[in-house]
Image (cartoon, helix red, strand yellow):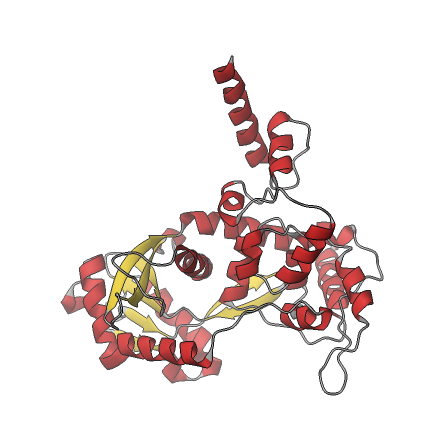
Length: 376
């Protein structure tokens, strides 16, 4: 009973942080961004409470340049339609080559056809039958609807396609409109796609586990489909998302234990934007900024491509004189360690590891010990 009470208090406190501002549902992009900066308490609290970070950033005077142009959205929709045309004929061609999918075992289910309110239930039924080995279970699932629990809130997620190979493996398929030129794609675009695909992999593995199946049936290799060179001919490659999965799990674990972050906050703290009748925020800007500064942010240059609060946090970091912040790739490797000073402190033992950093601290201490031995 005490555990249920704590959980209720936890949800109530998060709702209080949001106040009268409508909750912003999580999508795959927002969840993937969690993995871009593990260890950022501010991000964890804002997302856990369902805060509209874009609205907050605009109200503070630090809007982030996110969102695609109408032209880019149209181009992306046209490319996805091309890949999925005629019952995903082009997609099946690529999957046969990439995954060795037998022609005789191909069948296609468009989950969207059952209506939005039934999509999640229908997805569960189809995936359950496929994982159980039913002969008529199908091979391709278009517009499936998965879920993920984010700090007590259910997020609904829609991967482009879930491809099932009857050899016993599910593969997430992501269709992106950025081009692969001479076999190379923009590394930042590929990294963002990998983080988003990792969200779908984790959601599908969670579903299989809930249904009593082996979650490892979902491959950590996702199928990324992009236009090749400057034509619209799609090309498929496999992308290993194990590293992104590990970072995502760590960050989601932090969010399920948000009570520890909430304990250190003043009882009257709120990020409420106080929207007026027209929906526009009315809260004094200085008051909102002060509330946000009571939380700990871990700004890094890569936040500029992942978080709506990036310019606000960058301005704050500059005012504090931060100059040794680590980039995303190093942070991913170090499990959320934000700066050179923090890494060195964990390595030489002068800094106590935060929750979830124990293993990273041990590895850094071992690396420091080996460094000293080599120098001697």
